[in-house]
Image (cartoon, rainbow, N blue to C red; front, side, top):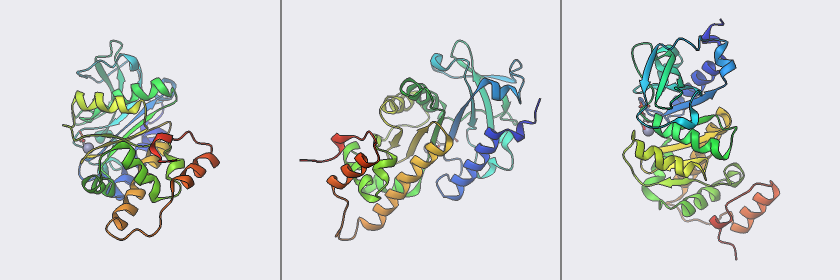
Length: 272
Ligand code: 13P
Ligand code: ZN
């Protein structure tokens, strides 16, 4: 059995959480990440027949029964993951009845998975139903994205349109746009269900006045989506109080999407 601390997926979680912390997106215990693992890659490092603890889920995760995830722990600080992955991360396998998570490694001090695990697992289920290669769900509190929530209408079309206008590459990076949920109580099955519903259509979902969810086939994809929204939101926050002299016009956004061959939300543009 290989040393789990040398596993590429542990390394990826350590690097990503440290990076997000340094970007100022994940203060204190803010944010959470789940990455789905292949059974054969997990089996190189762990005895899959010897769960440490059984953690009830409180919802039905049958579509991902038997799937294995590495996921950040609740109350854990992203800034601390790198120094102590075994306390701050856990690896769980969803039980055959879809009602519990079998802890295979981690949460060493008796901890458990993120309070947003319902939103993560339900989002995994939703993304897998439209993209069988999806592996990552990421939640974060990026500063400018959050700031923009207070001063911009929280309408999916209007918000996506504004973000697309802020950087030339936005429509190419997230042609599917950004879904938006109204303010809701976090850490609940209800916000999980609402997020998952949006995730069938969008890889990015904003939780009003809270943060953002990103989904992807790789950590880079999920991270890159959030990073690009945050950059656009930063440009918006730096310019929205100033007179706007120039902009990227809708015809130009269309030209970009067509040139790069992306399937964009035509209904989010105002074309004649
Ligand atoms: P956890 O500490 O449970 O992961 O919660 C952090 C968070 O961002 C809640 O939305
Ligand atoms: Zn949060």
